[in-house]
Image 1: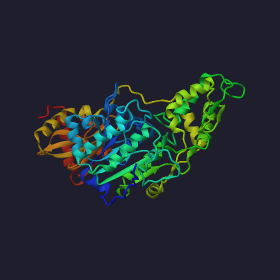
Image 2 (image 1 turned 60 degrees about the horizontal axis):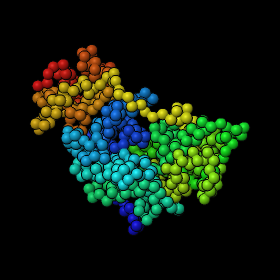
Image 3 (image 1 turned 120 degrees about the vertical axis):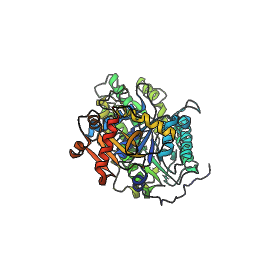
Length: 516
């Protein structure tokens, strides 16, 4: 391969906050239901960044239910009330991102930037058309085609530090393809997808985030995926729990010989830190157009990981036999361990050193938490105690649902959009359980329909919680009462509050009457 060095790009772009204030342009986030995406979504919503998420429906949950379950989890644990993103039911592996005509029209018109976070973490491909190539390369092609259609100029891509491949020395943030050998299909697909993003001619800037190996939350231990370190942890826990230990704590008196020497480094990074740095960079456009190695100053070692497995699982008797020390006369426990961990053979190598110049310059106030024995033990004990949980996937029965309350207006709004009718709009930001963002469409001082999202061009925005919207619809409260009780906020119409309240009252009255 030819040497490829990433050229610096001009970072002189308008302020993101100015952009949001004037146009309310949405950022399209892919991979929102994954571990990192979950944290990115929370962080962006906390900053009132308008977010649309591309989410594939599950077997038992709709796309909206999957997102709502994540946000209800955050609200339950933190006590805060979050705004809701616009949920687009789609699939990035499909043409047009799997969106129906109305959703594609909306996304093309209102999404001004993209954070491409979706990825397959599968290390070994069963075919060139299978994972991880299907999502990481095929998905990238579809995302880039969407960006071309929508005129998206600002692109943020989540790559991986391991596009550096198998090499020693320092891997620079300014490098990409320097002829390095790649360790597995995942790394190959991520290198290709990053190159695709950089070579796409439609972008003003491409911002690339290259995290190390993402582990759980540094404070709570929360995680929903169990790759890499967690795969070894789960396997060690299963073996130790199902085998008799001798008087020295060894598993059936057997040793496990690892083809490692204990000094191999692994760049483990907590998910909350990765999301915090990414959010900071995204929300500060002066840092756009660069590449960021999101890696720790001091990496963990395989000896540290071995010690963690011993302490947290009782998986004793593990010995380092050197890189060429894979045993031929394997014991029962060794055979079991190697069989189940073989997909990660390429994972347990010595990492290069990762240059962090851009990361340190952009986020000096966000140092990476130290991933040492103390943190690894705490994270391990947490997931073992919880039983390696994954989020439930049962259909949600929402106590309050703004979408149901406003469905009549939304149906009317679709007809207006199809007819090309223009109208003023009032934004309605409904927060909490079953919330959503909507534009109430106005004609001659009367609400005649509604659309999903608050993409701009509305005269003001009303913010309230879903139960309070329900109270208004049922006549148990008035907009003025909620305003006086500080349960309703108005932005943009501070000089015409009475007019805004009258419009809102009229809109709510229309919910109990046929919309004409």
